[in-house]
Image (cartoon, rainbow, N blue to C red):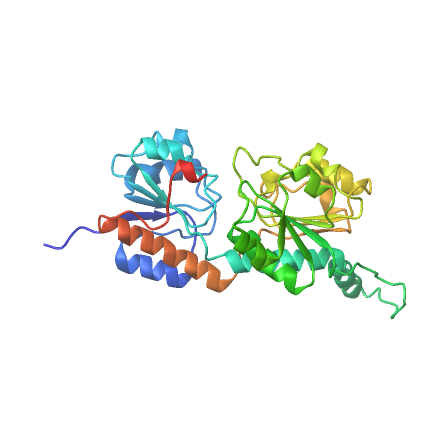
Length: 328
């Protein structure tokens, strides 16, 4: 007698290839629209599914997990970040959590470099001028930006993505510096020609560009707060492709408006889609709609990771990308 297929609930629309494969392997419930699930829909999902496949928009907190049925045994997150999931509570209830690390590293690092170039070379300002038909021709002093080569780049969080940013930055002739919870092994530092700063404060005071590449955890919330942002040079810029909560967005906005920081390139925001309206008014701020990992290839590879984690669990083994509280 064939084994009954696992019940899988997916909270958002995924690439067609991923949805097709999920449908072939499991008893899957897919979304008809790309709207996030409402809280009642999430409650129904955890009450009925064997496997939940959420995304970063879904708050899988203790209250939701408390309403889960006994059949829910795996939360196979579609994404690397799991700050929206109460991993500790899930573990206490015997629910495993997995994610999709590694597949978005290069895509996010590419976007980090794009933001660095966009801010320092004033690309969006030039684009806006051309779209409005305001260009009057070439001039020696028009649209002057700054040269990237030779600038000091301070990477906050030297994990997979941070190191990928370092490789790209070196190719552009930047000097790589970093602050991390733990110093990298000497051979890795040598590979990236990277200088470690034990003191984040001291690093920030000396950098021309600061790139945020650390995860969102209780210890990194507002890591770049008003006090630390004031340590930066007025000519420095900040780029964030990680999580918005790492930066005190209001403080950053005030300082850019006051000319105390030269600019910023942001792909993520402290309050999700509710971007500080004052940021939108600043010509030296580049805002993107959380598209750092938005490539067709990356999204499909994320889905493949989700499927592998579910299949491995179904076969009675530990998912290869299982997340435990000690990792956070």
